[in-house]
Length: 78
Image (cartoon, rainbow, N blue to C red; front, side, top):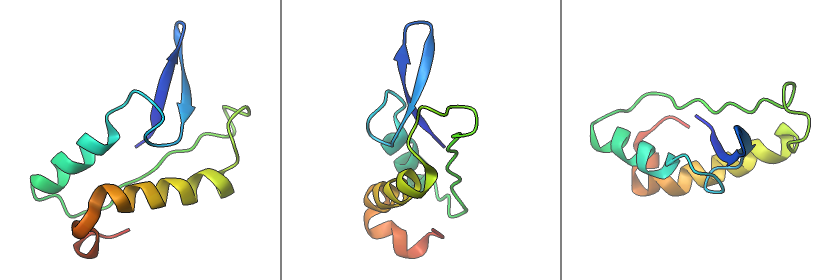
């Protein structure tokens, strides 16, 4: 999973909730449909050197995902 916002003809990677990809709705639909497996976050610093480092971005993603999962997070693997 990743989030991005349009930049002309391309896309800029951003932290969940800052882009145009409906990450919250995707996670909610997965949970509502009974999905209880892993969620994988991609952060492509090697290919996008302009984005913040993984040590900063990935903890933000984890916090945001936990918020998206709400009460469901106890039954999901994070």
